[in-house]
Length: 510
Image 1 (tube, rainbow, N blue to C red):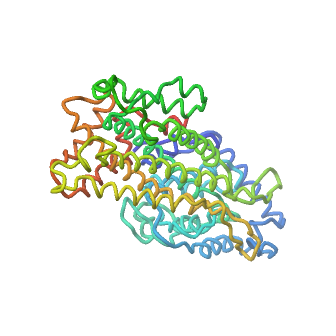
Image 2 (image 1 turned 90 degrees about the vertical axis):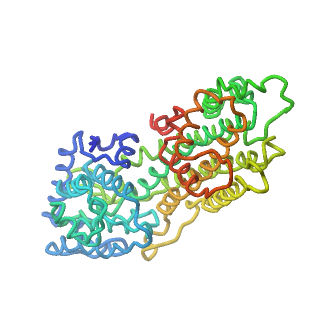
Image 3 (image 1 turned 30 degrees about the horizontal axis):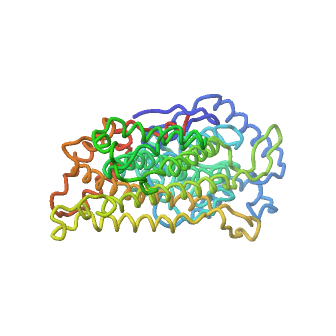
């Protein structure tokens, strides 16, 4: 198992993605020193009896209630149990892995005032593959992701459930089997664990990683469709892009030009082509996908900052200073999630339109629906309908979450970000877009078959080989659902981008 050394406050997006994909985390930098410093300050405040929010008071609207020293541990335990009221499906295992690491790294910066044992509980659970079962719904993205983080913490305390190496067990039993001790909370520690934007941030990062792979596959599918439709690569001329000056457009046009370069199909119609212009979904790819590329890079920058942030409350700022603020408000993540939702929606919209061209004999010059013996066979007729359905579903899901707010906690928390469900939808949206692109890849590959023995480019032929490893040419109608499932998985796994030599996530992370 790979181990990623995280430097709290300075970890890279590639570190977080490695954890999402199965790596474990260790904490480097000056973590031990910073943790000890913050812990000492909390202990001194408790000893002095100074009234401090979150240490010896109630929470939220109950902040004015002073709690006796003898009840401080129970205060934190009660906080976790009362806040563990999430609902809905469990967060995916990869998200929970990332959540444990990100919360540990945030606490390790020392501004939360927790003991080392609290951070070790998080990292040890990650190493043991003991993942708390966390309901996805119940956070409004302000005052921290309270309900989901409470379920995370409750599991480490022995309540709820844990998935131990893929098997769901009662939390106490799972901890015992894994050789882990149940966590007993001290002053301020429960609040430090459930305040923060880590759930919404991990979901947004999960969405970004998936959408980056979808983006790569969409560029590959777009290039393949241009060649399959005997379209022109002239609109990708760098001189056109330079006159506009948008960096993403310039980059995407170069990628598309490189992907098609050397295609025998393209050369077969370069001279004497009667078509004047291709439809927008072919020739405007640099403009649309270039804009998407810019959004992905901007979101990556925002989430990189947020993943390294201290976002609980109150914060330990120095000797005798524990100060209340609002770092738990997830508005930056909410905006980032909304941008990702719009971006992945447009990726799917463009792909579906290219798919529609591929099955339209008037536009493509190919057999109707790419079917051999059309009429007896329907070919890709309903595959395009599936792509259209998924594109429309993503349009519905793309409505911005961040424009919504609802008061909570007796109007103490009167403006919230809705970042968590804004980020959670990205997982479904990325899967929808991957299936849309999967349909396009299947159809484009089939269209290429009609141009054989001519070959496409050296960059695109390996993509066709990848597809043909699981998906045979459509010589007659057959049960297509397994083919679509295989194509979708090629997109989501990054195999399509890899086959063509692309990795946009690495670019975004630079």
